[in-house]
Amino acid sequence: MKQVLLVEDDDRLSSLICQYLTEHDFVVQRLASGENLLKQVQSSPPDILLLDVMLPGENGFTLCNKIRPYYPGPLLFMTAKNDDFDQVFGLEIGADDYIIKPVEPRVLLARINALLRRKVEPALTGNTHQRLQYGHLIIDRSTRSACLKGVDVQLTSHEFDMLWKLAESPSTLVDRTTLYRDVIGREYDGLDRSADVRISRLRKKLQDNTQHPYKIKTIWGKGFFFVADAWDD
Image 1: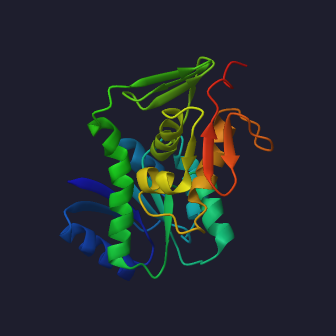
Image 2: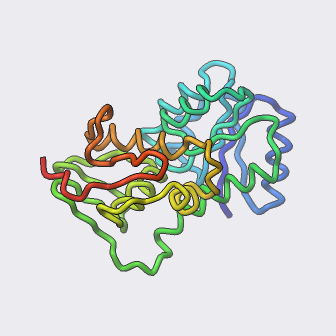
C-alpha cells in the first residue's frame, strides 16, 4: 500500500482527505504543521507528499525548499490561492504538481495516481536502454540518476522523468502533448505551464544558459528539443 504524508492544518479537510484516500488503499500519515516534516521524510520517506501552502509557522514554499535536498519523491501542493504566480512559484521551487482548494477528492486521487505512475513506470518498461551519455552528461535509468562533468545532479523523481523523455529522443522535437501525457500524467490544455517550469529547473541544474538555452531548447508553440552535441563543453 502506498504511503501518503499529508501536511494540512485544517483538521476537517485533513480528515476528509485521509478518509477518502484510506478507502482507496492508501496509508495516510498526517501532520498539522511542518515542524517535524524534515525529520519525518528523512526517517520514513513517503511515496508521495501532499503539502498545504498556508500553514502555521513555516509555509509550504519554505518547507519545500528545506526538504527537497532530502526528499526526491513526488510533491503536490494544495493551495487556496487561485493565482498563477503562486502556482508557478511552487513548481519552480520543486513541486511536481498543485491542486486548488476546495479540493475535489476524485481530482486529488487522479493527480496522486498520475504522479505515482510516473515514479514506477520506468522500472516496468521493456526498454533495454538504461544508460545514455552525451558528452559530459550521463543519465542512468536503472539508478534514476544524472551526472554532469563527474558531479551528481540532484534531480527530483519527475525532473528525471522529464530529462529522460527528452534525452531518449536526441535532436528530435518532443511536443507538449506527448510530454504532458507521458511525463506529467494529464492532457495538455493549452494553458498549463508545468512543463515549462520543469524545463526551466532542468536548465539551471544542468548548467544551460537560462536566458539563451542551447542544451534544451524551446520550440515555441510546439515543444522542446534536447541538443545531443551540446554537452561537450
